[in-house]
Amino acid sequence: MRGQDRISQLPSDLLPRILSFLPIKDAVATSILSTKWHNIWTIVPVIDADQNSIQVDEDRFYTIVNSILRHPMAAPFPLHKFILKCDRCTSHAAINNLIQAALDRQVKELDLCIAPHNIVHKFPLPVEVYRNQHLKVLKFSKVRVHDNEPPGSFPPGSFPSLKNLQVDISYACDKSLQKFYHHCPVLEELRMEGEKNPFRKVNCQFDVSSESLKALYIKLQSNYDVQYDDDEEEAEEIYTFKIKAKNLESLFIDEDILADYEMEELISLVEGNIQIGWKDHQYSMGDRTFFNKAFKIIRGLTHARTLTLGERTTGVRLISFW
Image (cartoon, rainbow, N blue to C red):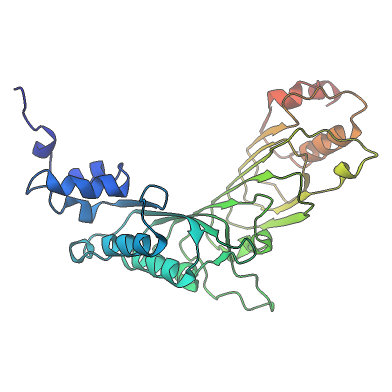
């Protein structure tokens, strides 16, 4: 029938799930549609709070998101996912309050991108996140974690339920992200993604040590044309990964910066997928840096049942030397 409201006739428990696909300001706006829709937005399972989508000043942004998270009608309903993106964070206390509100609602997935007003003062992950029993998925960018200094000071019992972790390891990432992974006792999937900037000479040495890890994804891209010359400074190691994970089953590497890899005890590896090298650069037999790094990766994957080499790697006929 023409003009019939079919959406409102859907089961009541389905409507909040539908609204969860909308930006939070659009979800709230549905409250004016009818009496039935008046409070549905308060119990959506996913809250996506992006500072760019809510055009208000910083303090007002925090107030709006806090009122949504702590709405009285929402209290009985666990939160599945909370996404918080701030491009100009000046108040760590306000951010902590929003994260705590999500934790109070037993959030299972937390996605944080907190850009500080000063690149030196990155947002520290609150200790309540480490100890939360309900958190299973954690993604963050432009934040720092506890650096375990002095040794033994890392919050005890950290990440008791965390299964999936995704971190931004771009050139501006905090040094604290390099060695904390062994503090995640049940971690099964780790994704490390980032971008290298040619104007910052930083050496990042990541120690990925885990007995529970089953899948590791490393994706690194340069935002400029990389060409290595064995006699030039650019051949210096910028990113180094030391991987020690005896139960790792899947390893995926996709990068064009030619990072260095040290692999130990990958005795359970089932599949390896390797894509390295600059897309438009024609490597030749004289490119020793490329070949040395490529062979070093492959030697670390001797236990893999299947090995896939991407087109950027096979484009230099690497297999003919295997």
